[in-house]
Image (cartoon, rainbow over all chains, first blue to last red; front, top):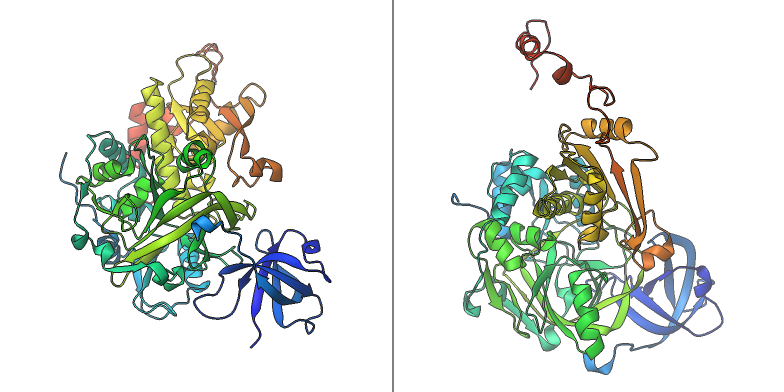
Length: 85
Length: 485
């Protein structure tokens, strides 16, 4: 099953295609983990069948965008300083 | 003081509310994703009974209690008063109790503390094991803390702070929260922990006794554990945390222990707020790293769903903020008759009744209120005379529209401290907590001649002789009118 993700952006330009991005995304997969976040390196595409997972977009005040994307998570990024892990 | 019989914990409170018809038991399964939040929101908007949701999807054994103090009836129950008590009577009782001698808490043994019935440490720590609700669709996350207390202690001064700082689940071990720089915790972090690069121990207590929730919400200078004792008439039971030296309410439903990372922030929000909007931007905010979770068997998570009036965010905050401002003004010798914040103003407007004995008294009141530590939370002060009933919006609005000079009666103070939650401010001002304030002076100027210059109020109570008023009142039904209650 492909994974479903969601991202909050202030501007759709944050979801530039054709390059590696670093985004904070949350899982929409069903279950108790739903809505937990990860920081990831990824690629996105407006073509829904281009990349393996789906990406839904919300704007800064929670408004659901009509624009849908596909996404490929390349790797998880750990931002938290070592001392807190 | 007569014996107070207030509910000692969240469970006694729920039972009392069910008994009086102020809470309803919901037996069918409720989804933590939106459904529970929607039930609470609708109950708030209808002024309905508080929902006690006994079965939660994915979380057997847990329950929710929503909108704990979103009506004055439930506030009266929380104080051990008759649910039908009037707001002025509840206010008088609050002032009486909080002006009494502080009652120190007692620390009990861990084995006697209900909140230690289940303990998750190390690899077992996972916030996803708790039924953290998605309160509003479109929120930035599932909110762990909506009706709770974040407990910290100043390492040098020893000040204990219980504050209601909203907390969002970021992942299984991380929460992010809105801690504004002018708040007690915000000052503590910026003054002590951040310069030293130290993490700040915290504990979040969820499912508190209603009076502990009231104390955590109240902007009182009295330390919350003592304040709870004063409100309930007996010491609050505390217990030591598992992983730090903080003391937490032993009868709380859920305790989350950890450390605040002052030099590391993660995204928080947006979230439905007490103003009735999602205003504050999604931003990088304070990070809470979780080290331990303890909870009672069959724990009940409390939910406050903030949005349009009225919920706890407006009702309780208006209540305690107004009364603490009343204490402040009385402590300065201002001849006020009272302070009221209407919940529908989302505690943005402070209405003050005063005997106008000297010039500039309205501005003095505004400057004292805005200059206090409570000042960032409201931006309008309306001052009316001692003949106006501050609890009667019809009278206050009439005074506002007829006695306030549109030039001389409005006093504006620019570039003061505000909150990022003010819907009317610019995005820049929200980001930097910049606010503006206004005083509406609805008093007749004291240099007007009271006989020739001050207009006469034309009302039943004011223009007819007492004997005529009594005659008309006593004959009212005989005239053919229904009885006036």
